[in-house]
Length: 285
Length: 290
Image (cartoon, rainbow over all chains, first blue to last red; front, side, top):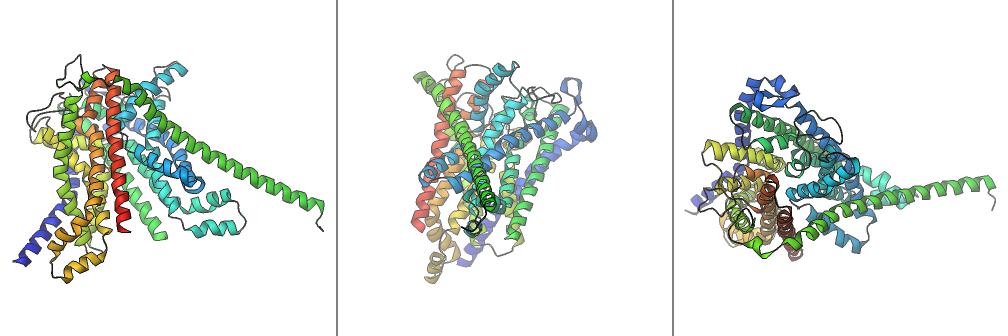
C-alpha cells in the first residue's frame, strides 16, 4: 500500500514537472499554427521584407517593425548597458558598506516597477521634454530607447554585480601585489574575468528590451512606417500586436500572430545565446 | 640618492599618469551610479508627487463611471486575479520543484529538458503570453475575454518564478533532515510532506510574494485575455480589468491623467511593497538556516 502511494506521488510530481515542457510546446504549436498559414498566404519573403503595413488594403510587410524593434533595443542597450555595468562595478568595488546597504535594496526593488508605470512616466515626462527641446512631436525612437534603457538598468546591474562578485578575490589581490592601483586592478583584472557573466546579463537585457510592450507603446508614436530618424515615431513588433489585436480579423489577425512568431523566433535565438554563453563561462571555470 | 634627475622625472610622470587614470576611472564609475540612481529615483519620486494629491475618496467608489474612474473594481479584480493565478501556479510549481530537487538523478535527460523549458518560459515576453492566451482560451476554447483565461495565462507566466524559488528553498534544506526522517522509517512522500516542505515554507512564500508582484504589474498578457471591463465580474467567465489594465485603459481612452497618476502610485506601492516583503522573507530564511 505504501509502495503504491510512493509511486503514485512520484508520478504526480513528474507530471507537474512536465507541465513546463507541455506549456512551451503548446505555446509553440498555437503560435505557429495560427501564424504560419498567414505567412504562407502573404508570402514569407513579402511578409518579412515588405516595407509597408496597411491592413485595410491587404498589404502586410513587417520590415519596419522588425527594424524598429532592433533600433529601439540597440538604443536601450547603448543607454542601459554601460551605465548598468559601471554601476555594478561601483556597487562591488567602490561602494562603502553603509551606502551599499541602502543602494542594493533600492536597485532590487526598482527592478519590480511595472512596465506600464515606466510607459506612463515616459509619456508624461520624456515625450514632452523631447517635444520642448527639439520642437517635434516627441513620441519617438529616442523616447522609447530612453525609457527602455532606464528600465533594463536594474537587470543589467543585478546580473553584472553577481558576475563581478563571483571573480575570486585572488585576481584583485594579485593585481595589487604587482603594484597596480585599486582602480586599475578592478578594471584590468577583475572586470575582464567577469566577462562571460556580464555578457549573459547584457543578452538577457536585450531579450527583455525586444519583448517589452507596455513601456514603449505609449511613447513611440506607433506609425507603421520605416524608421527614419531618432526623433521620428516608429512601431515595434510588440506594439504592432498590442495595438491592432483588439479589432483584427481573418488574415489581419493571422498577420499579427505571424508578427508574434517572428518576435518569438528572435527571443528563442537570444535565449539560446544566453545559455551558450553561460555554458561556455561554466566550462571556463 | 644616486638616481639621475631624468629617471626621477620619468618616474614622477608615470606616477602622475597612473593617478590621472585612477581619478578618471573613479569619475566614470561615480557618474554611472549617480545617473542610475537619479533616473530611477526621479521616476519614483515624480510619480509619487503627481499621484498622491490625486488619491481621493471617490477613487475608491464601488461603481466605475466615466466621470469618476473609480479604481476599486480594478483593485478587487487584481486581488481575485492574483488568487486564481496562484491557485493554479503554486501547486504546479511546488510539485515541479519537488520533482526536480528530491527525485532528480544526476544527468537525467528529463530533468535537463524540464530545466531548459522552465528557463525558456521565463524568457518569453508577456505580449507572447497574451497572444497565446488569446488564441487558446478566448478563441479556440471560446471563453471570450474572461478572468479565467487571464488567470491561466498568468499562471503559466509565473510558473518559472515559483519553480526557481521553491527549488532554491528545497536545496537549502540540509540533507540531515532527510536522513533523519528516513532513519525513523518514513517513506519518501512522507518525508517530503512532513519534513521538507514545512521547513521550506519561508522560501516558497518569498517566491509566491515575488510572483504576486509580477501578476499585479502585468498588462500585456491580460489585455486580450482578461479584457478591460471596468466592473467586478459576477463569474470567472466574465471580463474584468486589473489595476495595470486600468492604467492602460485610462491611457488608451485618452482621459484622466490625474486618475492614472493616482493608480500608478497605488500600483507602485503594492508592487514595491510585495518585492520588499519577498526580500525580507528570503533574508529571514537565510538567517534561520545558517
